Length: 287
Length: 264
View 1 (cartoon, chains in turn red, brown):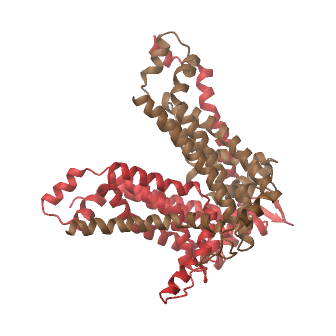
View 2 (spheres, chains in turn blue, cyan; view 1 turned 135 degrees about the vertical axis):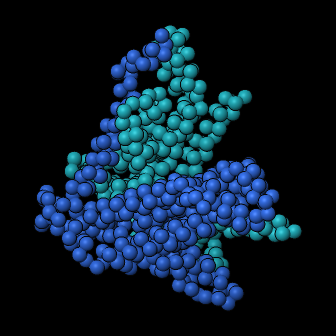
View 3 (spheres, rainbow over the protein chains, first blue to last red; view 1 turned 90 degrees about the vertical axis):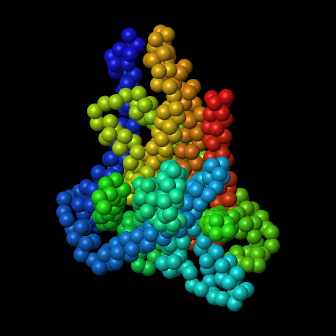
């Protein structure tokens, strides 16, 4: 009878738990996104938005070189950040997954979670001070007779900011997926005379592929959408796409054009995410 | 021998990585007690002037109060929605459940700057932008998925027959919810409250767009940073760090103490 009861569901009971999410996210999540798509076809007249269905904003943004400059810059920076971050994170994740005790690994992951709860803005501001012409890094380098180097308002500065945002997350994701790799397969490779580096490249990496790719995708999404690092550390000349959104919204009152930029970003991110998921789960070709 | 060299180099590498991750956090705390306006090596003298400056600034106090209010309200609503969703996923299967779960988990994958623009446009259209509760609404959308994930994880540790056992013993669905499910999920609920509050307390992009003149602490930081080098940012940042970490550690302790009791 009791299991029957679960079937003959009490409608009220069921809906009380199901509806809050549907209501809230439809009104305050789907609604805004759909309006943004519609808004990209609106017009701005005398600083006021007028409902319309025109392709003006799209034509205007896509027809301008500065939009494509921004697009390529943002895409290039995010791609560089993803590659650099994945490569920097891997040895650390490898060490955490294979070379330390389980307890130490748990502590390391706990430590890596801490940055998520510190203000990213404040950390960026710290880098700004540390990397400045007369900042901490340059004065330390000065003692050994190097520098000063210009690090702010360069792509290097932007990358430092991106890595501040993404490195902890990528290390966590990589470590978790590497820790799940079956040790006996690694040992088998060793026993069969496979060298250390070759074991990593041909056994460990393919087995942890999904986690590594997920980490890289998150790195790309976060870097692509971040406005703080390129603005404060990169000098924002030319602006990246997120900065373009802010400019169009805050100073220009050009919300429709900002929507065009936002939608272009989302389409790009979806394409990247789908390609990555496809790559992660694609069957390896027979050799 | 070669093993040792490899092990040591990996350890050094790990140490460097942790230095990179933590140096901006530590630097900000150190700079907040440093007298120099533009900190460098060698450091200036110990000073609490930046703290004095923020504690005597009514704008900072107002923003701090607003931030606490926003994160408290966000935490309660987001955790409620997260619990409902986690329970629905745990108990029921239905058509379009995939869509339902996508709705529940997608928000964090969309860049905040895009959410900020979409939220601003939508809220001003329905006449709800520039208010304190505009921030609460937006933050709830962003944080509910985290609450859902934490509570869902806890529910998956529950023996699924516990609930039907309660029904067998004559409990109504509501009674089983009250006496079985909620007590079991309680540590996760408290964790979810703390974590969503911490996320909301730190969020600046969406808050900056929809808050209008009702600035929260991160928005105040953003505006100070836009001006010039001003070490007050470090002082506020250290204060925010302390608040968020208290919430996170509380969440962690609550979750672990309950799990230990369950295990013993």
